[in-house]
Structures are given as C-alpha cells and as structure tokens.
Image (cartoon, rainbow, N blue to C red; front, side, top):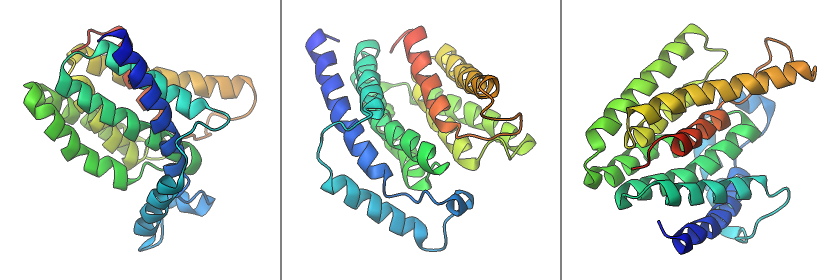
Length: 230
C-alpha cells in the first residue's frame, strides 16, 4: 500500500483505539466477575460498553498505549496486506482485537459478545478473497490446539482464549500456513517471557495467572511482520 494509505490507517487506528478503550470500560472489573457474570449481566455489560463508546470523544487518552498500539497495528496491516478483502478482515480484527485486549487486561475475560460475532464477520469478509477454505482450516486447527491446552490445564487458559485462537487462525490462515504457526508460537513465547519477567521482578510465583489474550493478539501481529503478506 502507498504511504498515504498507511498514514491514514494509523490515524484511524488512533481513533479506533480511543473508542476501544471507552468500550472496554463497560465491562465489570470486580474480581468475582472473573469467573462469570450473573444471569442477564452480559447483556447489561454490552449495553454499558456501547453507551460508553457512543459518549466517548475520539481522542487518545493517557497513557496512550492502547491507542498507539492500535494505530501501529492498523498501519502494519495496511503495509503488509495487499488483497483488499483480506485487509478489510484484518482492519476489523485490529479494532475488535484492541477492545478484546483492553477488556482482558481489565477483567481477565474475553467476552462472547465480541468473539462469537467476529466469526461470521471474518468469514463474510474473507469469502471474496478466495482464501476462505485455508483460513477456515487454520482457524479450526489453531482453535483445536488451544482447546487441548485448555483441557490439559484449564487454570492456565480460558474458553475465551480458545475462541480467540480460532479467530487468529482464521486471520493468519488467509496469509498462509507459516503465518498460523508463527502466530501460535509467538503468542506462547511472549506470554512465557512476560511470566519470566514477573518471576525475576518477584511480582509473581510459578502459579500466578495473568490475562493471556493480549499476548495471543500480539503473536498475530508478529506473524504479520515476519511472514509474507497477502
């Protein structure tokens, strides 16, 4: 893509990051909510989230990290992905991923209200590209790997991580098998490095848990950087 398109994508990413931050504030941060929300609470959270986003000003806020990362991800997608439909899928994923990363960081949850609708949205966007079948196969494969990991150690991963893995497989599968492998491995490596850092800083023990979604999403961006774009 041309430089003006990449710059425009970065600017839109800043705006999207601001809205993603506002959207995330609608989700419950109470510790007891990490294990689930009371019946009817999920719908109330989504309503609060959309209300927060509607009221938000499209301006970055301190500490600017989410907005900056979203802008960088949007620019990276515009630079690396050349197929228009695949780029549309990645652009949607950048916005949804920013919201998921912030929500997971704040609440330790990856809400179905974002992950589940993202499946049909990505399928519709990828279908005209001619890469839907390998994308679907990759989504199933990466989702299955995370499902096994969740089954082996449910305390270390949540079902939200399994659903997110399927989405990451869909996206990276449109770029090729190598991208899927890199994304899966990079997410695990980044999470492991973070855990080691916590241990070295004596801020955690070997049994300490932390939200893993942001590292999975970062792994997808690593794959976008290191493998051939579409």
